[in-house]
Length: 331
Ligand code: FAQ
Image 1 (cartoon, rainbow, N blue to C red):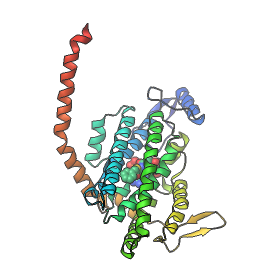
Image 2 (cartoon, rainbow, N blue to C red):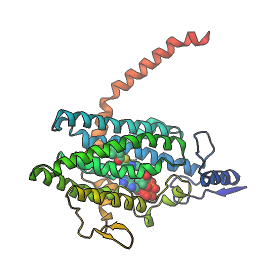
Image 3 (tube, helix red, strand yellow):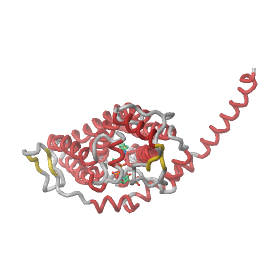
Image 4 (spheres, helix red, strand yellow):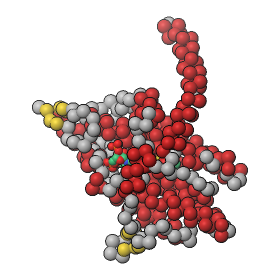
């Protein structure tokens, strides 16, 4: 007995799955079982995971650039050391996530090619520029804050390797968020010019951070299948609201305002409500027309080319070692 794959929104070829296996798989997801790499899984589930995990990995790698630009300009040795460590952490997260994606049968080279060719997406937020030191505070506080809100939920994702990677990554992201908030606090309590820098950074990063959670639920094409398969535990809008509710009081504590005249606390719902999000800006960034899309890819391609000799040296070294070990292995 066979059934159509249930995920109509998946863009890959329609695969006819074995109905019995499919039913068992759906039951395992419903029972909160972890799916492991060697377990049977429908093609649409595999493809969705490869898409999401690799986009996530690319985001971490491209996400090194906006802060990396400030390593040479950090205002003190301590700030420089912290920033180097944070940017390095993001690189580590990317590598972890590429490894998790590889367990699904895709190669690192395929994933890298998709990013470098411009075919693969990465988070919209990293196509915005970092213009002042205060942006290091805003990125840590808001971008890492939004990332954690999304990633805490992913720690319970149905796919084992992704969920386990998320647990470790969240611990580091939490440190990142706090160091960002501490930069904002220092600036907000500093001179008038420093407070203005902090306010300006919040003004520029607020709306793009709300877009990080993805399109509204009503038009989120992958959400239905991902929620059913417990890849996603909360909808895009629910996570966005959680982030808004957690972040607005933090901004007020800093003595800053949000760039939204319609932002208000609704007693009836117990939530902070924002004005409308400009989704046309989001579509533009996803279409490659954000302020820094071209620059981000150009830098990534250049870095990849500059690192070619390292990969080649590692390949030759590994081949030599394997050759040396061969006779021993034959004994
Ligand atoms: N940017 O149907 P949905 C970080 C795409 S990590 C670009 O709702 P889904 C750490 C989406 O891919 C930040 N594209 O999709 C850090 C899909 O396109 P496709 C990254 C977006 O997957 C901090 C289409 O729109 N985090 O920041 C975005 O169910 C500081 C339809 O959307 C993750 O990736 C966007 N914002 O839900 C590093 C978390 N939103 O593939 C350095 C894992 C949506 O059909 C410094 N990902 N799209 O061509 C997820 O949780 C999900 O993939 C969502 C989107 C929630 C992002």
